[in-house]
Image (spheres, rainbow over the protein chains, first blue to last red):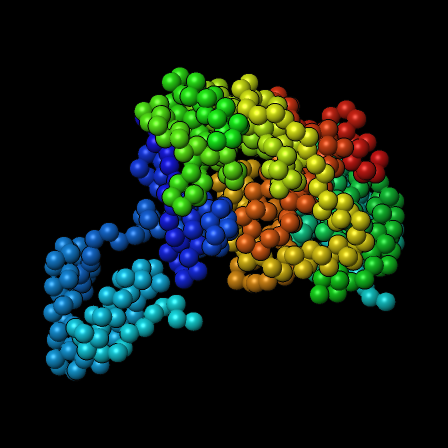
Length: 136
Length: 135
Length: 274
């Protein structure tokens, strides 16, 4: 059985909020279509939106965390990687104070994820050093 | 009065030999045309012509073998099909379509070559420099 | 439910058991319409069948047939989409052997909104709706009435709005090359906006649309800068009709002129010297 559908979503690249359809053929993402009768983008997209599907199945995309051991990046489990990050961040915080940590978040995160990151920066680390890649 | 820059794409088998013939007969023609030899006039894609204009040429000429005399039998059929359309596109885009010139010059037609170059250079000299019109 | 929608649904329901799927439009969340492959496994989904806005369904057909060359499909297509499918077939993008075309004729209102010259299907065996006459595009006459400097100024202004999203190329059912000249640094330079004049992007694209553009207006509709680029394609299409007697999508077994050598009497129409 062949399955083809378009999944309506919002472009992940900037704050404009253009709507786009992800074309899904047999459970695999194959392309992008603009959403014509959507009030925000009215069928238009910029070059980023048109290529929003490209990174999802890209060969260069990291699907597992890499940890540098003896100067070489090696695949690790998420638990391992996150424990390492937490441990190192903790070390930096106790040695040099919370303001020695800065957090840069992304336009590709959702609003909720960005909220969580600033919460993490302020409440857990204890710093106001939080910024965003699309702060133009 | 400015000296127009003209690029001539000449097919290796007819028109380039025609230019040789004109040269050997010591015919006089204006030196504004810079000649580029190509294997066949069918090699000249619209992209090449447009890029030539973009690089600052005031006129582009494409000379090939007469229809039926092509070294590759139907190479110049491509030229005859695509260049008229490109001329139309130039016209619709607001660029003088006279800036693109297509003609057929055989290896023996040295005299025709000299006339064609002379007429085209005069024609282009009457137009403003291409770069100026694009500003 | 409008008449056309209900009779389209009936037509699809009739053909659905005999095919692997029917490509048509479906209303999704928030009333947003997108192409969808209806299948006999889920006939209930036909309740969400939609007619408008038109979507680039020839591309959908290509995507599915590339993955499933032997699939037996039906596709609901309007006049322009049918022409697009026929042109793609002529350029060997897929085989139409197992494809059933369901022609959906546009109504007067849709014709007005698209300024379509031929809003009806000619090849489809199954049709829905009554064909209406096409209209003349007023913009074509407007551009033709301009003087040469006016045309230049008009296109300079229009193309200066281009943000190079490549949307017109992406959505075009006739832009199917694996390697695109517009992505080649030789022809279209990167990193310059607005594009320098003359616009290589738009002129190269216009040349590549010769004897291919089916007049579906998808490029103009998706353009975030509302550039009426297809006017140039239509003006050229008029010349191609005169010179080579070819109209994209009109005759199934007439080969496009760019694939053929000059034929008897064609040279005289090109306006080239003898």
